Length: 206
Image 1 (cartoon, helix red, strand yellow):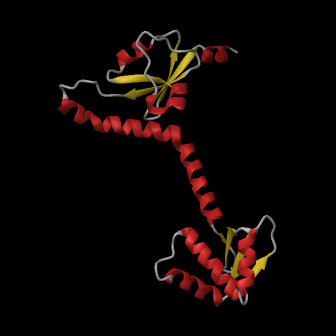
Image 2 (cartoon, rainbow, N blue to C red; image 1 turned 120 degrees about the vertical axis):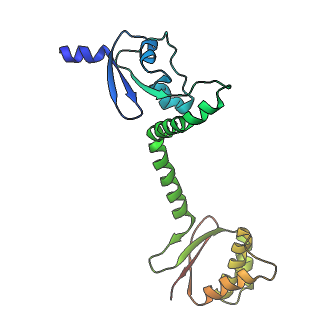
Image 3 (tube, rainbow, N blue to C red; image 1 turned 135 degrees about the vertical axis):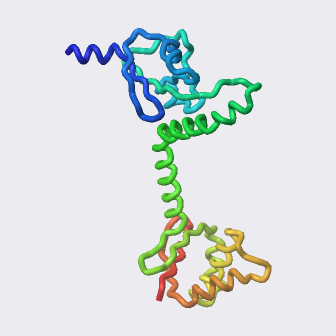
């Protein structure tokens, strides 16, 4: 019971190196900063919400019991000491990088997951090497294609032209379309009955 009450009456101060100190409260930020010149105190909650834009504690501010704070080295804002700032710039960048990495590591993992999901949804690769492409065409356009086409390969060629035009990949002489159609004719072509005026164009390796 005594340890529990004692823990609530103290605040934790963490350094960039990972070292943690327990400070008994009440205590002002100035008393800690006096022992560590060239440093600032950042409240962990402010860092979590605002990142490196978090406002440092003023010397007269008191640390909250049970609160967690970061003790970060920062160079003095002195424009007349350019050389001194350059010497300390490495320390400043290192501290910022390590603090940012600590607070934003989960966000990086989330971004990678989003990129992977987008890559998978762009084209569904079949186990046998085929590619499934989904296109939307007006009903009248579908009927016209079916009426003007001789067979399934002819329909596939026209659909390929629509696809390349939509992707902006068709050049002046239609070379990209011919290459796609040539590859398509060497494979089996199948059409899946769907609703909502969608055409599923599925090519699978023969």
